[in-house]
Image 1 (spheres, rainbow, N blue to C red):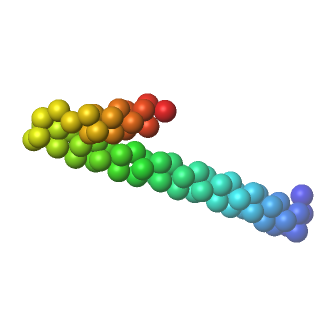
Image 2 (image 1 turned 45 degrees about the vertical axis):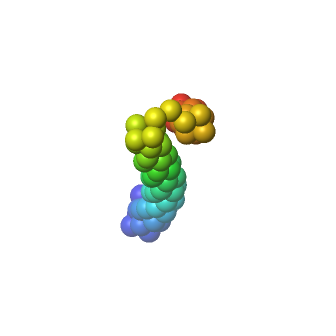
Length: 74
């Protein structure tokens, strides 16, 4: 390979790497959002459980906690 071919190849490879990195960053951002959502749901679950402890059994809160369990499992 002459120098021009080497440079063209480097440009091609760097563009390819850049595209792959962009895709990876997009995937990581998606995963971060999923983790933030899960954390929010866990915080909500904790608040509902605290209310149950304070006020005793409440069927509405119990159903909400059941829904949260479903969300966390699926």
